[in-house]
Image 1 (cartoon, rainbow, N blue to C red):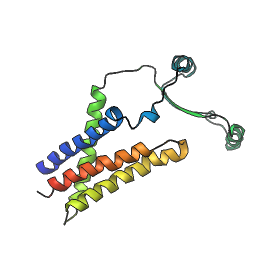
Image 2: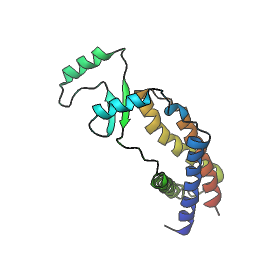
Image 3: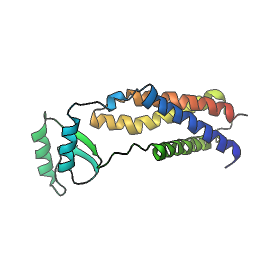
Image 4: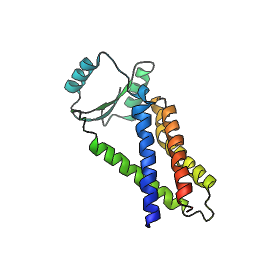
Length: 180
């Protein structure tokens, strides 16, 4: 790895990270994923007494070891009834430092991998860099957030916006930087 790649990744990761901050905190495109209920204290109390361990739960579900026939019957009996996906944690922490560091480091690694790919293009120009970055961002969106939305009926328009905007900005940076 050379200094051009490292600088490109550090700055590119910062660009993606700043967009993520703007999207989630300042502009708050993702507010629909964090709705408020005035019953939150009651719900959390019930969850804390009914869920034994931390994890993500899908309700309704069948116990481990349930036969395929019984799973099918259970699924049919739940058609048209409420369902939920719950991410349960026993203790909330507001210390964002390590999470922000991990998020930024992840962005730097992602941009570094992208730089490796871009540097394989012998005639890299600004347009190719930007379009390649957008394509990578959209591939990530389609294979994660969008695929999950198919099954869990979630609005992913904010995630698509994040993929396109952050990777367009990063692509512009990399198109400038890598061609120097």
